[in-house]
Amino acid sequence: MAESRKLFIRSYGCQMNVYDSERMEELLAGEGYEPTDSPDDADMILLNTCHIREKAAEKVYSELGRFKGLKAEKPGLKIGVAGCVAQAEGEEIVRRQPLVDLVVGPQAYHRLPAMLARLDAGERALDTDFPEEDKFDHLPARPARPQPGRGRGPTAFVTVQEGCDKFCAFCVVPYTRGAEVSRPARRILAEARALVARGVVEITLLGQNVNAYNDEGTSLAGLIRELARIDGLARIRFTTSHPRDMGDDLIAALGEEPKLMPYLHLPVQSGSDRILKRMNRGHTAEEYLALIARIRAARPDILLSGDFIVGFPEETDADFRDTMALIEAVGYGQAYSFRYSPRPGTPAAERAQVDPEAASARLAELQALLTRQQRAAQEAMVGREVSVLFEKPGRLEGQMVGKSEYLHAVHVSDCDLAPGALRRVRITQSGPNSLGGVLVG
Ligand code: SAH
Ligand code: SF4
Ligand code: F3S
Image (tube, rainbow, N blue to C red; front, side):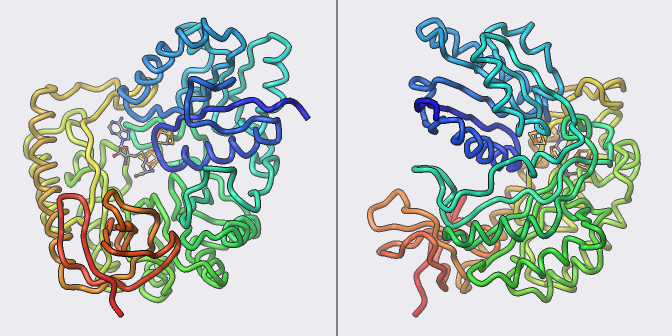
């Protein structure tokens, strides 16, 4: 056993990176690395990066620059880049920032132990393969308890599907994560049972196209129904879904399966058919609205969330009005919106770009509407009873905070419950980003 060394990992981007970081930490624990929350006392720094927009990718280089001083003080310090920037840029990273010792892509991180051995021998290590073998088969089983100070308490992520075959014209994910692959259901069930045994009560199933999940005929709905049979697992969520993969069985499960939470993130990106076509989304605005109607028929109280891109190449003001009209028609409880960012290697990056000022003005208008809708959805909770899974103490003395089934943060005062408690709460107030309530009974 090697002497104990300290590992600092920082995650950027999506929830799948958060999950991958946890798995890397667990893998490297077997190599004698203890996690630390501070880069200053680390022997190894890993940045688990995101390439989705230019800003996200560039942040990596400014962050790396900040470690220069640390590396000068501690020449033994190893610095690694993992995740989607690693996959997209590979060796280019080392050319731009020579202090980087290691570059590992999202499908190759199970090979980290061998890479570390190369570092110990004084070499650099780079691996951005999409290997034949499944990395999950080569990772240690989830530990019986999280490492000290780690884990997400009563909630956990589990990746069930990875990669994307959709090739939206703006998006790097099919290139950074590779083709759509589903993990075997029996392995997911085993991982879920291990997490529940250590006190997890809510699991969020992750996938770039999670509802495209298919393990030899077992769909996402089938997987959810299997997971729902695990005693002690109280809540199941999944993200991110694609409108084209929203099967009837999944819609039915949203209506029928009590452990499946009434929250659905279903990005549409634009409300203009012309732009949807140019984005290669594979559906029209009307088809999306018809889908939403079917989902609401199955689960009337569902809270809908979405992603929007404004300023996509050739987007006119009329296209933008169509997006605003779609948002009005749906009524989102939560949403994320972005100005289009041209990404190297994607088809849309080559097209005529929208004037940045016009795009920013559209984004501001769209975000104002989404904020109004989000507030309205929160206000509508006041007076209602919800179930809250308490996660951690709040900022105020004696306060606890948790999430409702609709994923609203809920604060309760004078509350001595432990994290993991699931209770009925009556909502009494709505603040800018969270709700307040009182325990019922
Ligand atoms: N697989 C998911 C989302 C993946 S990326 C889906 O299909 O919806 C998360 C979000 O980032 C996307 O939904 C999109 O809104 C946004 N995004 C992706 N590429 C972008 C780009 N080049 N510029 C701006 N936003 C982008
Ligand atoms: Fe990107 Fe489109 Fe795939 Fe989502 S569906 S990951 S937006 S290419
Ligand atoms: Fe970013 Fe890669 Fe996730 S590009 S959003 S970290 S899949």
